[in-house]
Image 1 (cartoon, rainbow, N blue to C red):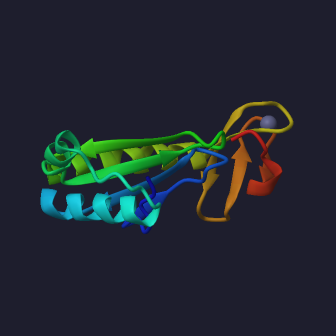
Image 2 (image 1 turned 180 degrees about the vertical axis):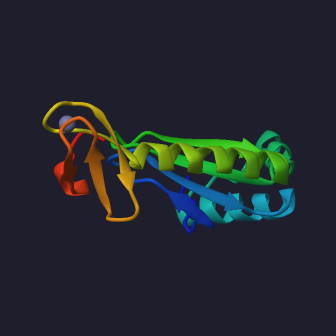
Length: 135
Ligand SMILES: [Zn+2]
């Protein structure tokens, strides 16, 4: 299955992992998107009855992909569930990208928007994002 064009995305495959949120808005639209995705990848088999029935209740999905090429799809049957989970993923991504470890002493550091560096309280040193490998 390949569903292109996430409505919103966060993260990177090589770091936190990539998350794409697709807000179809109704079960009918979800079904259409999956039918089209099936056609695009050239599946001869249409969705079976069980899949049609299941997807007909799906409001939106979140697709996850990691650097090992694992892809997972989470299905949400309401706007509220989709939005709540998407907010949680965004918060986790922000935490992930705004936390780093000092290359010198290993202490946890927080990203500072003000000067766009990581600041180690212990060493009193600033680090650029690209100097931090393990974040
Ligand atoms: Zn340090």
